[in-house]
Image (cartoon, rainbow, N blue to C red; front, top):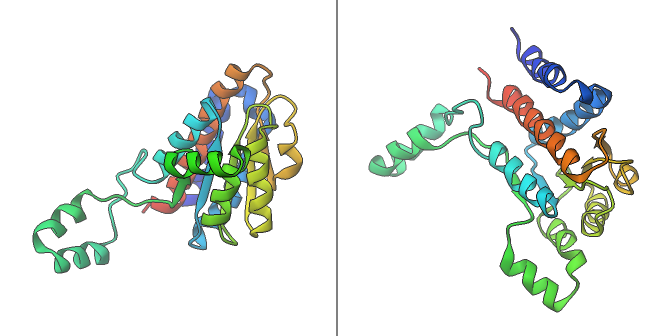
Length: 217
């Protein structure tokens, strides 16, 4: 079975387990293609949200930055370089480090966030981080159950100005994020907790698809 088939199988498995998501199958695939291109070009993902979506941002980054369902051993040449630099610690590092897809959750920087909140404007905190971290070719993924979170929308605008692609993960009618994103996944639910219940399998599947693409032998 080739790599592309395994990638597609992850999406098909999602739809079999959650038939309600069949209506957004193509949207999930479109978001995956943007992420695939981002990582192929050596770029990174920035993720942000509020409340439960803040937790989802951290969760998604955790699946990308270390092994998810695969061990992701480091390349042999990097393992050799580690051992040459420090024979004692290098061996431990070579055995323990895992392949990563570079991703940053913008929700976990309390020093910066509280300083910007106090000194400037709390609604612009994510946008400030996008401006500071982002570069052309990177991707911003904004998670908002309504699609109308102001700080996420400001960040999306900053991302587009930096030459980044924007992905929205939302619900209800998609809100303003529907028109602010290059790709948007609007899960078919209205209640916040039900939207969040579908967001998790969606971003898990995106992470599984990316892991198959970049870490399958």
